[in-house]
Image (cartoon, rainbow, N blue to C red):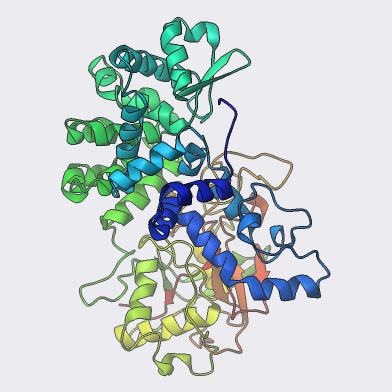
Length: 571
């Protein structure tokens, strides 16, 4: 029984035998498989025709997207969609997830019990914690050793988890296990398939059982002095530590959930917030005392030196709508409230050696944020108003955003969309707002000292959001890369000589390339466009401030492209 498992197709067939109502049977199966897997299955079906056409056209072996093929954990031989139009990774990730309830049901001993528990209580899947408790209660219903067995399994679980918390299938040497659980209890646990033995090692038959026994004794461990920082070290608290599922279950079993949340929040606020939302514990009220501290933390590089932790707290603030820094949001009229930085008139060195003299101008301290750009999209006289699109290419539909948090920079914005935004905001504010010219952008970024980076002339680890861990190149330069856009302004040590933020990394920025700094700004579709500053996807040498990316496709933009704006008239 330790090694016998059922495949998903067989699981579905068995469920239909036990649950004779076919609608309920299908519902149970998909609750086990999970909603994300069901979505992938529907997508698989909806794209069948175009797949076959592409496969035939490219002379690739075509494997029909049948029910049986879908549930193969590895790609079928000659599987066309692995590397072309179908991303097979999402399917494989779902099927190989060790925490999947489908893998729990794959144990022949459990599947009939789960089916019967479902028929007895159709809402049993509303919380995994309910299902696990009901299942364990059913498994141990006929034993007089229940209390002692539960205690020993809890001790075993803590030892297994502590030894290797990130391994969902961690095991323990049999000899060590027998110091924690009597042999008769171990044999009983094996008999009901709670644990399994392989090569003289013991492990729980499913990761959720491991976390269940930890969760049901979590309150006792805390009473004995367990500190959250032991499970989420200060140096990496924002990363998964392997204890997340256990504490999530523990919250469901806690006699005082708020006490557990308070214990967790001081060390892992992001997880605490997610759990509070899931359990409807009044997250906004509960976390209000932390608001000011989190707001300060996202720009406090002394006490929060790692960009990942500032990013984590910044995104938490966004979810709570608590990031109130001036310059990233809206004013009382619902228009972008921009923090203007004055760049004084005078000479500077452009590119390598050209000396230029620019008149004074203002530039936005931050990249235009999602919240600010969406005010243009949603305004009645905004994105859909044809006045702002004269001589510009208007996309058929707005870009789909990879990251939608209000305090992240607006990405996937074409040059024409950026120009339309400038025209709209100019009209609404009576100011001459425009994309910066290359010259304006470069002076604001480099100052009069011709810096290579906003902070100086040498590479500085952690000073900006770019690919400094260089995953795709041979030389490893650091471990701070987010590999995604960052909340604007969380790299204060990377500000330019004038105090402008995120001019190296985060998102590459649209600039006009045909204007030399006069008052006649080119705002039509025939203007040249370049991208400056590099992005989170670029390596350190690509975010040097003299780097120019010339594009012939201003009507297109990826998730690594955004913009900021200039103003040529005083306020």
